[in-house]
Length: 68
Image 1 (spheres, rainbow, N blue to C red):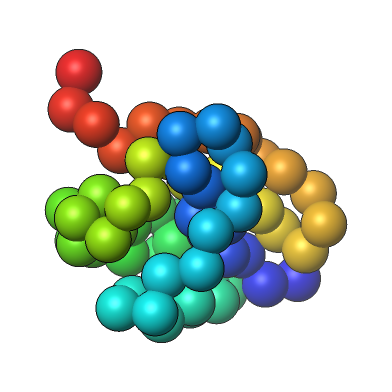
Image 2 (spheres, rainbow, N blue to C red; image 1 turned 135 degrees about the horizontal axis):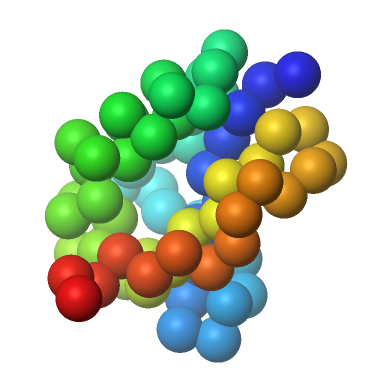
């Protein structure tokens, strides 16, 4: 199964970000590394949180991109 990020707005609804292409990954580690490199771009494009999925299974949901 492929891993991928679902981009979400402040309400948790999915959003499409044209500035950042949707990526799929062969492992959770690859997906997390990619997010570590691109989270600022996503936040600037209006993404407030992300969920990590493997196929239809949610690994974790609504992780905020805002610094704590």
